[in-house]
Amino acid sequence: METVAFTRMEDGTAEDYALLDRAGEEHMAGMPGRLMTALEELKVSYSGYQVTRHEHSLQSATRAYNDGKDEEYVAMALLHDLGDELAPLTHGEMMGAILRPYVRPELVWIAKHHGVFQMYYYAHHSGGDRNARDRFKDNEWYDACAEFCEQYDQNCFDPTFESLPAAFFEPIVQRVFAEPRYLTGAELI
Image 1 (cartoon, helix red, strand yellow):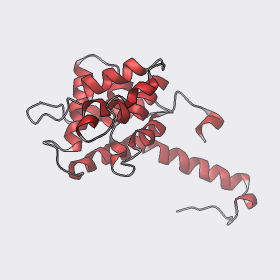
Image 2 (cartoon, rainbow, N blue to C red; image 1 turned 180 degrees about the horizontal axis):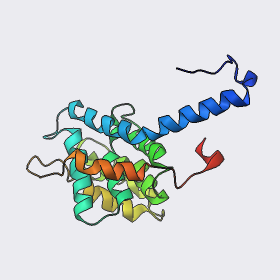
Image 3 (cartoon, rainbow, N blue to C red; image 1 turned 180 degrees about the vertical axis):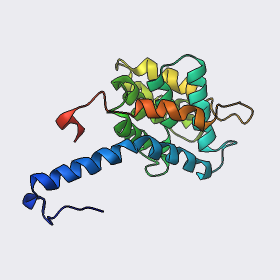
Image 4 (cartoon, rainbow, N blue to C red; image 1 turned 120 degrees about the horizontal axis):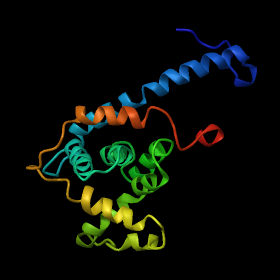
């Protein structure tokens, strides 16, 4: 494997950084595959629900797809909980950051905030504030996030639901993550 010559970035040459640019492009091309692998890993995620986190994700995406949501929305629905494994307390923020260059800002906001909106359905049973989402009442995407949680999240733990397989969604993920459309240049850093 070819590597740069420098050990300190300030000593790099144009050739070194051209090499890193090529390596970066190859790495970015693998993004959809890494996301699908992370989805597969949800098959062995923590338990307690009647379905795996993987199946929950498939149910979310299947419901969104069946309702005619566009590919960006379906991809967000499929991937919205991937962060549960690495950032269980801030998984929405993690997914928002991953989605940000690839899906419209409304969907980034939904992914980022769906956790607090989801609390509406359960927090009152464990001493939490089910209305914590109301702090976002003035946000233009409040209703969209509430709808996502009602239609494509809180109801996606059904062991009798017939989800589309992960392979069905792979081309959608490939297209959505083919290139960053919503951020360019310095915004990507």
